Amino acid sequence: KYMQQDFIKEIHSSFPERAEKILESILSEPVTSIRINSRKPAKASGLEKVKWCDNGFYLKERPQFTFDAKFHTGQYYVQDASSMFICQVLKELALGKDICYLDLCAAPGGKTTAAIDCLTGNSLIVANEIDYSRAQILRENIIKWGTPNCMVLNDTPKKIGKIKNFFDIIATDMPCSGEGMFRKDAFAREQWTPELVEECAERQKNIIDDIWGALKPGGYIIYSTCTFNRKENEEIIQYLIEEYDATPIEIETKESWGIDPAVNSNAPCYRFMPDKANGEGLFMAVLKKPGDYNPALPKSLKDKAKNFPIPKECYDMTTPMMKITSDGTNINAIPNSLFTPMKHILNLANVIYFGIELATIKGKDIIPQHALSQSINLNRQKFELVNVDYQQAIAYLRGEAITADNPGKSKHFIVCYENTPLGWMKSIGNRANNLYPKEWRIRSMNTPAEPQDILKCNN
Image (cartoon, rainbow, N blue to C red):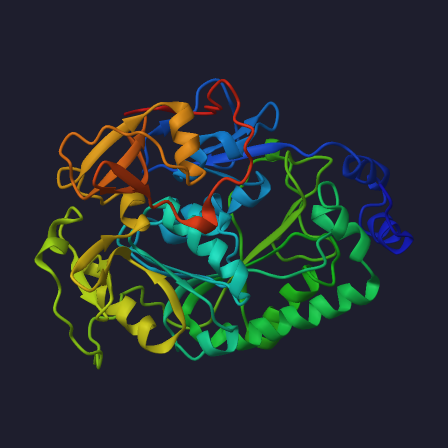
């Protein structure tokens, strides 16, 4: 694996005693790890645990995730173990309070889904991605995770920064030069140049400048990159300290975790280097904004949105009851406690997903949405649920027509694998149409003979 000489010099400069070990570790095989969705029915057994994340586990080898039905239903997320350190950070910062949380550069969704599990169910989690195609991947993963307290934005940091003093915590997993991904990403190695490092550092400062106003006084910013150099890491932390009077915050760690401190800085920073920590390269630091902190969610709002009639069938699609909204075509459910802050964001940002997408109205038809089938708030008593075997489950996830016994002959029914919903089918006479989202379907036709079940189900 080719590495540029300027990068090698940087590693020798920052880690003179361990440089060769670090460079050697970059040439080794990457580890595979997953994080279980704590609100869905699956459990790990016989797997090595990630030390800084209660729901994180290492796999002995990388399986064919594509052919594990539980992967498609959001029962776990494939995430680098180092990135799971966000769980340890949020556990200390949030302390079980209901807060407003922003994941600014959120795609594909690993740190966002981790935040969902770490924060209370009454916390508002806003996940943003500026790139449209990546925002769609983020939306997919949020839908599969199945919780109703999340919104997905496709917007700029500058525009979100105008939502003044709103967020208690902002996570900024910055676009960077990607040195921490060299072990598993050939493109990251090939595109790296010293000039790229300079460009990324300047972009990171601009993003901080744009978003700072959205953070509440006394709130926290979580700064992270997947790169090693000081210019994009410690020097940006120093920029926050000098320009914004931010205070670095120490996070509890254990020596056995193998986390390195800052390089040539007294600020508490957390470096995951691949020769010591069991994961890919990561840098993370937490800073506090000056001012008196008030964690309360906003209580009032002037909502100018037009009210549309909502079909009565939609009111018991979820449990417990939520506020149901409609724009005339799309019907969503919003947790009662989050109605005001969600509406506030809907008025000010480009939102592409929020709450639970329940249904769309086409003429006289009410068509249930895939997000409802994946939601932890699905009212399973209202709909017909039909279990299929492994081969049928994979065929369904390909978008194929499958034979599924629909005893109640409901117009729409849910296909399940091991009692976990995969998605909808629609009965049409003697056949049923597969309604699994076309853009999410499995493309490969090579189905393994045996189920690729990484996790055991609690159903």
